[in-house]
Amino acid sequence: AQKVTQAQTEISVVEKEDVTLDCVYETRDTTYYLFWYKQPPSGELVFLIRRNSFDEQNEISGRYSWNFQKSTSSFNFTITASQVVDSAVYFCALSGEYNFNKFYFGSGTKLNVKP
Amino acid sequence: GAVVSQHPSWVICKSGTSVKIECRSLDFQATTMFWYRQFPKQSLMLMATSNEGSKATYEQGVEKDKFLINHASLTLSTLTVTSAHPEDSSFYICSARGRANNEQFFGPGTRLTVL
Image (tube, rainbow over all chains, first blue to last red; front, side):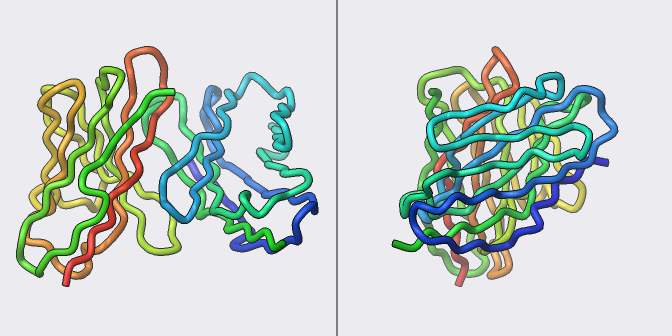
């Protein structure tokens, strides 16, 4: 069974603080993809990153970084020097080997960045 | 990146009426389109997968006679909520997949309110 858990329902930080959003996944597939999406109040999903199961290298994109660890089945997302515009709901998602089309979304983490 | 549009962006209707939501891929051909439903403060749940020219595949628990999906062309899929009731009020999001890879491009969503 495929499952994504985002244990943090809501996080509040003050601008310029660093924040890490946790994502833990469950799958029996050997090949799978992990994703992070941002959903601002407007509702539109913004793609942030896709990582396949064979690539455990951490990735950095500006203030965003991702830590993929297969040993702990985690794919955590860190925002450094957070800004008010980062306020949104962030979803982690998984798609598996036998049906790459089917996305399993976590419950989302609402990030509030206060000025 | 690829652009997916939805129309309308929001709709309010009376209970018992039917509502059609359109999903269009604007700059690519979408062999597969997906329909998700998101209740307030909840995650996205896949409702159905539609392939151009064939019948949609519905997820368990989704009534296919209630949520009619048509994917008549490579750039358009429609979701019709038939005989809508207040419990159908939700945020409906479509996504589209091109031929090249399994990345999905999400539309901006349609907020349906049934009175």
